[in-house]
Image 1: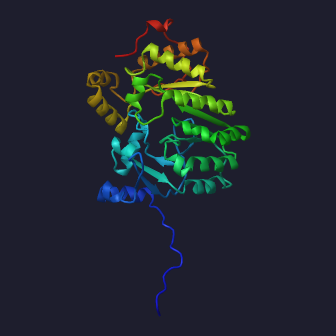
Image 2: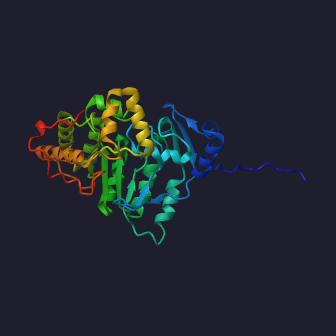
Image 3: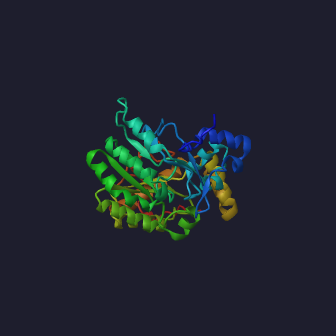
Amino acid sequence: MAEHPLLFALPHKPPTTRTIALRIRSEGDESALDEAQRRADAARYQEVTCRSALNRVEGMPFNWTLNPYRGCTHACHYCFARRYHTQFELGPGDHFSSIIFVKRNLPDVLAREVDKPSWTRETVAVGTATDPYQPIEGHYKLTRRSLEVLLKSRTPIGLVTKGPMVVRDADLLAELGKVTSCTVCVSVPTVDDEAWRALEPGTAPPLQRLRAVRQLREAGVNAGVLMAPVVPGFTTQTSKLEATIKAVADHGAAFMGANVLYLKGGTRDHFMGFLAHAYPQMVESYDRLYAGAYAPREYVETVRGLIGTLQDRHDVHRRTPRIAGTKESADPDTGPADPEQTTLGF
């Protein structure tokens, strides 16, 4: 009997992230990622199939996270998520910002998960290990499709991003806020141009992000700013902190929170390498300040006090998450009486 060709080609199913990790381990990233697509930004985008969309976490103020992508072209040198790339036998340096995993089926998997009777509509943190509004979102729209699913299921969310593209979804975010809880945190560590260019080479300018906050607020979204991380020697000068906090106030943020930089695992390796290459004069100071993952408690509390004083000065409402490296809430009620007398640079 003659063989007949298939009338319709079977759809190609991308590999799972586990399969990719095993391939990289045995073949190296060039061979394992031969299907990854290059786009105008020169990064490679590898579509993958995820088995679950919601990830259970422990030790955080939330129990569930959602990340449509892994890796981020924002390329922030301090990003804590860099260390997660090592799980795929990829480096936390250039690989993190140049090899992006795209969970193509994530919205469909998410829809099945939140439709289960066992789903109790706990808060989902969106964008904890990658930015959900990095530029590739404009092509795949995985974040928007996920928000549509979460809105339909009335699942509360907290979302963190540096991407002004978030304003595209102001309609969904505002509607989520009406039927459940929805908080958007736009990360703006500093408005200082020199520090921004050094630390966040792939991000939109800080004032563009603050304009996004204003637009979200005008659309009825509970949107505020995370001045995170505060980076010793780069953004800790009083004048820089005050300029940022004043800009946050001027753009109508509903709240503001701040975290001091912490360095752990692959992130530490990358950041210290970045310093050695671009700011070698700061390496010794960082070695002293970061003997462990966190800066000394006294240093963190001094930064907290200064930021709290400046927030009071500019009437910016405080957010109360835990600051990395401390057990207390980020409600900085103590600190120097006169912030003008405090210098936190190296």
